[in-house]
Image (cartoon, rainbow, N blue to C red; front, side):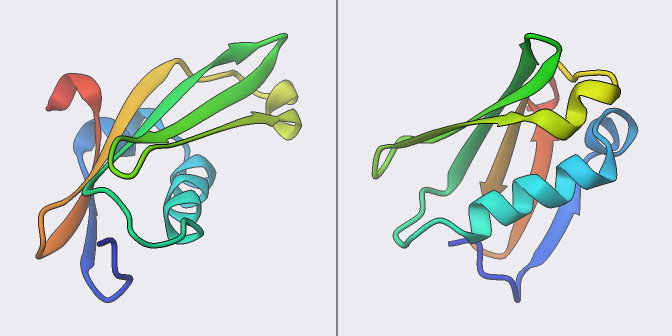
Amino acid sequence: MFDKSKGRYLTRGINNEIPLSMQVFLWDRIDSLAEPRDYLQIFELSAHNGMQKLVHKQEQPGYKAEYILADSASSETIDAKIYVIDDGEHCTMLLAEEY
């Protein structure tokens, strides 16, 4: 799952609402996961004391990690739920409301 040789795609919502640096960070979090990876990766972004909080989850096998991004304190925080789906042929990052 999530082999780098597969095409990686973004929806319009991701492109318009999520900064490129955050998109790259999310892909990096998936790439750093040990195998096996679930076909569905879930990211929940929210504000935490003026900084960006990121929760990364998957169901099978169970996984959850939380990050507080201190360098985001100078910029506006993002509130969003993001899915990244591997359908076997390509990987797509989309906002939950675009699903």
